[in-house]
Length: 158
Image (cartoon, rainbow, N blue to C red):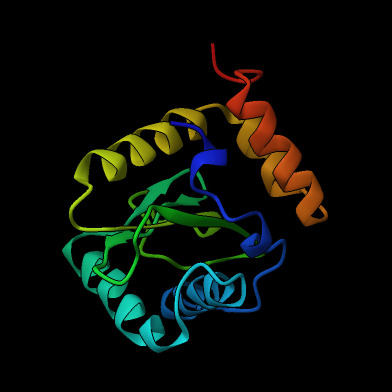
């Protein structure tokens, strides 16, 4: 699975305004609403589902990266977005560091394989320090999308 299979290009955000975990999640879910990938009436229940998943353990995986995710019956196919916070956000990350790079994934409950493949792809790509550094330095959505395309074409991870 590639980023292009689930990242909504219209929902990518280069500078989050939120300064806490819930705010980041709300801003990213709203980006998916704005992009037409999820219905506005499902906004709050999706936010709550992501927060409930966070209660099980932070998706802040360390090195300034978080991958909040959930399964939700309102989506028919896997959707996601990428966002950056230049200031960083306290996301209860495993290493205690602030998070700058976020990848949100929302998938249908009846497609667990897609959910796992997306998480696997994201975690594999985000292990590459060069890729992460470039993403965190991106100045606009086009730069982020170009980096995701390059990652899809195996230009970072061997």
